Every structure is written in C-alpha cells, then in structure tokens.
Image (tube, rainbow, N blue to C red):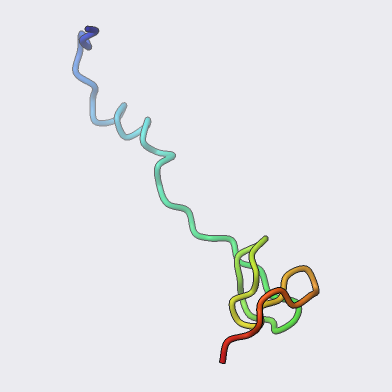
Length: 59
C-alpha cells in the first residue's frame, strides 16, 4: 500500500479543502407572490411553478 513520504503541511491541507465551504443558496423572487424561493423549485408559499399552479396552497 502506498504511504506518503512526507507529512502534509497545514497550509497544503487547507488549500486542498478551500472548495469545501458551504455556499449560500441563490434565491429568486416568485413572480406570483414576490416571496423568495430557490430557483427551479415550486414556490412553498403559493404553490406555483413557471406561471401555473402546480400544488394547492396550504393555509
């Protein structure tokens, strides 16, 4: 089995893991009710998607 010859330094380890950070969600406004929702997802407030009602709104 392969064994590393040298210990990986803290800076090299952190450089490798620099892309692991959690990025904030990109939100868009719903054209029907103007609330924020993730893109390409049914609006949780009014239940519309691409201009038509897909899910009945919950009270």
